[in-house]
Length: 131
Picture 1 (cartoon, rainbow, N blue to C red):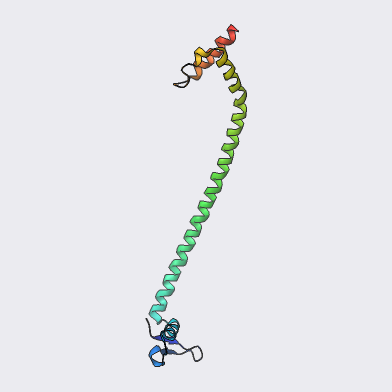
Picture 2: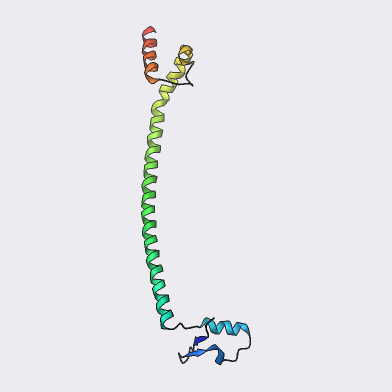
């Protein structure tokens, strides 16, 4: 720990050893009043300036990430809206699929293994022509 302290009244740098210290608390308090010399002060100022620059760069990055997050949230809302609209448009088709399944279950036997939309649409045309 450094031994130089600054006197609050006379503003002079004094040594901790010049004071009769009764206990460690007083010694620690006096050392907390330490005044760095010019070289140390310049180093501390330089380091705090570097830290301030780092903080400002991080703030810029945070603002950029926040704008990206806002854009992603907007895109997510748009996709959710599209999904909901697509589901509402598909609802009548799903009812029709259920009706066709009851009507012609042989075309739906391999539905889980693979489903070709073109063959299904041709099947719908054929079944529609037969009905």
